[in-house]
Amino acid sequence: MLTAALARRPFPCYILSRMVQYNAARLDASFAALSDATRRGVLEQLGRAEASITDLAEAFDMTLTGMKKHVGVLERAGLVTTEKVGRVRTCRIGPHRLEEETAWIARHRELWEARFAELDRVIDELRRKEKAYGRKRRR
Amino acid sequence: MDARGEGEPSAGKNRTTVERKSERELVVTRTFNAPARIVFEAWTTPELLMRWWAPKSMGVPLLSVEADVRTGGRYRFVFGRDGSETMAFFGRYIEVTPHSLLAWTNDEGGEGGAVTTVTFEERDGRTLLVMRELYPSKEALDAAGTGAAEMMDETFGQLDELLATLGDRG
Image (cartoon, rainbow over all chains, first blue to last red; front, side, top):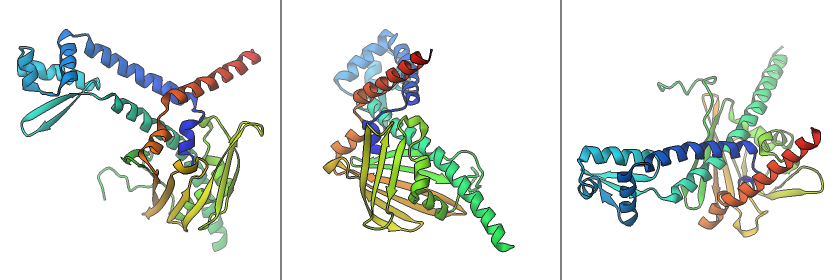
């Protein structure tokens, strides 16, 4: 009933701190990925149009293996997404929308996890009561 | 039955999954270690709902729960820190099938309200709960979860208040 409300309404501090932690880890990965000139170039290129690993290797005058490594780092940082169709792996810029979506889902999950943890306690108690009642009835 | 031992009632922590199934639908799933009649009871008894619907970490307690759990019956949940600043959520149960299905409308937001459907599926003494929230539009569902900036403002607002009370105590 209240998921909608929750998004509009006061959010627990722990969600905030989790999000900060999450963002911090993500920023570490992003900054590490961006510390390399080739990778920054790749991002710039992908910002203009999607490209295969082969295209990128050619554009940056690198071996396929070398480019795969760079793309892997960018991908782990969430800055790039790749998709393999047949023998071609196409790289695209990681959409910011994805990041927002992750946070959006995370917020819903935090709420429901907390709620269900309390519900587990209520259910345990109901089960114990039912068992105790059942024993009495059988006597 | 499966190698991961998920069939054992006492096995580990049950996972909550949240998925946006489509532009308009959010689906939450969770298994509970109890038969459906018990889980259903916890979802339909006001005194029990009071105990879990507003987990402490949410920061705002439930002040009252009224729930006439039958098809066509109404519910009203009131939240707030005290009587002066409260917030009510209300709607109507549109389908109630004991121990297996609950569906209700969320009317507090006017036209943007979702229809929530919860199913309880019992298997080997445990219950798989699936909750679907179907919004009238993509925008309504987006609004239910985004508005991150607004949320941050509110959370920081809360943090400010908390810090202020801590300061008073010191």
